[in-house]
Image (tube, rainbow, N blue to C red):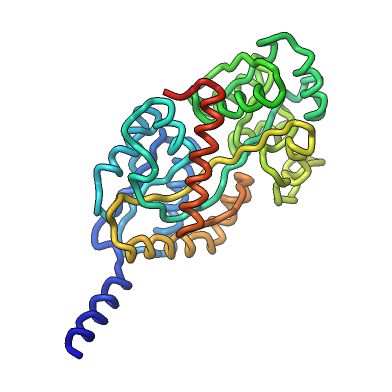
Length: 322
């Protein structure tokens, strides 16, 4: 009986785990980008609603296309006071650089959302629909179409490569440091198109400077409030229904170091469920037109494994593998 009582007490204490000191929240990207904005929104919501007794401190570790942040977490095995927000560089960085890191070196916690990509053109472009764009693209000479994107061998260029693979066309890909620079190039008429995330181009869309042609999701976006005088996010067709057989979504998820107790993982899963229930988070999701799919546990792990395989296939076909 005594042994059983001790076991029950141990299980109870484990189930009630919570941070006992400041939690480091690693962002494997620079300040101001989508991952950074999401991390700081999470930090603010958690602080405002007092969802955690200890402080949550955001640390940007963007070196080596995010490799600095991933290697930090990999080297912190057993530390429950460190979490990291991930984007698709969870896959693209090790595949394109060869750094000694895999998502299997860390612990999946929760998928917070999936970030969308939209095919954008300048509002003065002759392309009114994705069909117009596709017709012109197929008739173009190699490299006539210039696609601006963030980074090299990252999400924007992977989507561009996927477009090449499905249409047989050849783009000139022009990399920039961030989504703000990318949309500026489009507004200035220096490139043909971009695949910016919604939050990166919504201001220019609202101002009538850019035009969305299609979204790289399998379903239309659910947001029905008008962004412009006559269009909502939900009015944008998918690229697939427009004849461009390409889809792509970017992970926004949380991981921890390896070797942490399940009770610690459970604490963070519950924490982010509480965040998702707040009005502030719902507003942030709507502002960025996010796909609000959430996962944890075995389902999240399986999704990550499938996503890694897909990225490897896309990058191998594009010649991006290290």
